[in-house]
Length: 346
Ligand code: SF4
Image: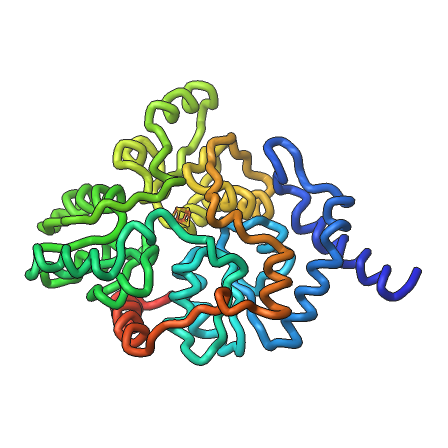
């Protein structure tokens, strides 16, 4: 066997060990042959990464052959923005959606930040422009403007503070203003109202009209049916879900909090009301847990592929390079740094 063939076999073994518990389609796990078919590509990407001094950040929702094959860091958008800030890399390949890569560029202005597919938008982030937010602000001049991290750089530049699904409640509670203009997620705004009431915190939450096309479709009536079929089932939901869904779930939290909850909860079955990529990560990292189907795919996240990651690393096209005007970047950075000040990274 040649040295190159040995290298491919070793890489296949590494990939198979990582992916063997993940469903590559419902009910079917990765096999050795499938891993061998893309081992040359992961080897090439990892070589290119070293040559370019690049770091690959992959969101938990992208395909597992990316998160476990080539990513240096995998997680939710908050975790990845912290890692982007710490990375000090010459080049950041952000495998997720465009607003996340913009966040990396805001925090790492000297790095070349690239995306494998410029079409990887987000129904939530793309629901509100900077001009749209300026119009809303004119109606609520006394409000603190709080943007969810799933927003464009333009919207961050117009906001007072950025939040994530993990720190949103604590940050809003700390703000001195009674009125909060929360953008761009209408359903999360409803969940914030409920939580503020529960905490006895008098805040008026006004919102824009965006939704996540993945999380908005989960249906509370399906939860009751699933509970009847799977006794002992634990239902875990993301706060981008509708309030009726959040109310019917056993746990509601950010991607990171959902993972922690599943790891620490002894239950016969879990129903994850979120993107399927997270279920894939849990299958790898906690193969003893059992998940019933119910998750949904994000079409934007799934535009990413290993081949596109290789191509953007080898020779990024101009449209794949994230650029931001410096004044806008500085204003957006202030909004994110305020989040880090109010809710420091652990
Ligand atoms: S899962 Fe929803 S919020 Fe996340 S990128 Fe897809 S559309 Fe946007």
